[in-house]
Length: 276
Length: 221
Image 1: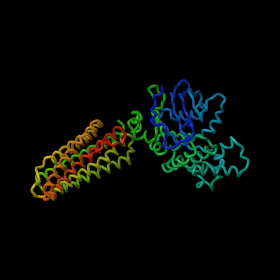
Image 2: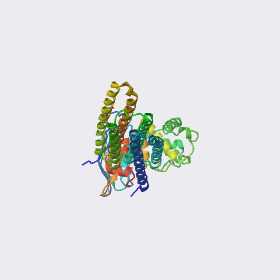
Image 3: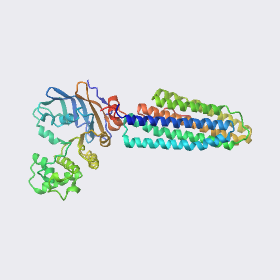
Image 4: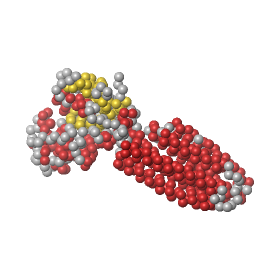
């Protein structure tokens, strides 16, 4: 039985499409070997919105989003049951190439991880080159500029395109990673604590960037920072570990409602700092 | 327990709100006594005492702002602080109404009373009773009790009607009474508005509990 409290069905924006969601988890369970890490998650992610996943450490937040682009199965012994639908199609259908899924559902990680031996420009187009042939230098430069602009980094690096990506500041490196993820032109971007290694100014820049990107992309962010979830997201999902140590979705609703008037006492206790 | 320091601050905030409520209740009592007993010294004390009410309101407001800025309150904690921010405005205004009545007591001075004061003291007593019950409902987080207080506003409205009708009769019968009668209507009106503001306080208590801001009862005035 799905006991998640879904308090609102729509976020603060209007959404196109008949389904009303772009990504959907149905009875999703994630295992590491015999260990059940995430259980029975049912969640609809609206297109062109930001959904934040919050919860105490070890509640399965990162595991859950890694299921959304088949990164979970990369870990030895990890598997899932249930479904993850992207545009109505189960991404776990046998025969579907996980790499093709990851081009449609990109990911940005906690620690900025530009390829250290590549220049800024090469970093941006690195993913793109895996999926298409970029023969001309000008073509690469155009793509790099387009996505560096989208990542709000162009003005800061336009004179450093040939420098190593690792020479940038932490916040710039993270935006470079976002530009790299965008350059593949995914439909969904998963962000696993993208600001936890950044200072407050760099964090706010990334948050501004996310709000801008949400006009064109669907973003799912895992964050430990509840104020960040409150600032950037349209919808918030609260997860918690149960007595069986499996993480579950406790409440899912509009962010303003979750942070001012949560329906579940466990959500209330967590966001008011009474536990966790 | 986690957030002990924050809990302590919330408790202090609530105690300060109750202290403000006590000052306001006292202002209602003393302004009414000053009027009935033609005690001009007492009336002046109410006017001076309003500064303490205003100051307490600003102190509480500052506490709320500091808690929001430093503690990032969420959910019910946030609603409590927002409710207190609204309640102190209503309490301060009730204090202003009491101060207004003290000023009217001074204006009336030692003019002979138009009639024995019966309904005005009743209005003052009822308003004070509502105020005490409203703050008690807030402390106990009791929405049903807050709603019962809101319902009592009709009693004060009816007393106001009664005062108004009666004084109108006096004015119609003898134009010489218009000055004194009009001042008493102001007094009754101030008390009626005070009771209305108590209902606002109750609505904020209900907001703390339910998360919804709604006008619970439509006042006649």
